[in-house]
Amino acid sequence: MNKLIITFLALMATVAGIALAADAKAGADVYNKTCKGCHGADGATPNEAVGKMLQATIPVLASPAIQAKTDADFRTAITAGKGKMPAMKSVTGSSIDDVIAYLRTLKK
Image (cartoon, rainbow, N blue to C red; front, side):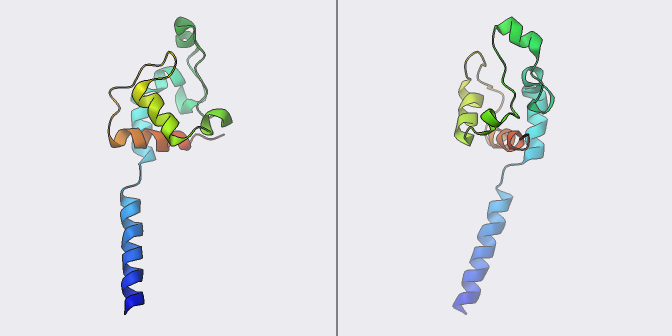
């Protein structure tokens, strides 16, 4: 009986974890509205005109160097900005996790 209860609880914890997981598809929607203008489609082709205007190099988000960053690094860049990139104040709550989940799908 105890094994059955433990198995049931483990299964429920797994299902709850899946239900709370970030949504990469929703993150793609947010990315396309908020990030694509500078970082380009699929994070692979940064907008050179914006980079020139800002006198900054916009990173390729799909690159191994950027993908090696931690989720915390991404979260900080989104919420606080990084270099000449301003904080994305319109991206809040679970949308931040969704965008990070989407960024993780961009690996080359």
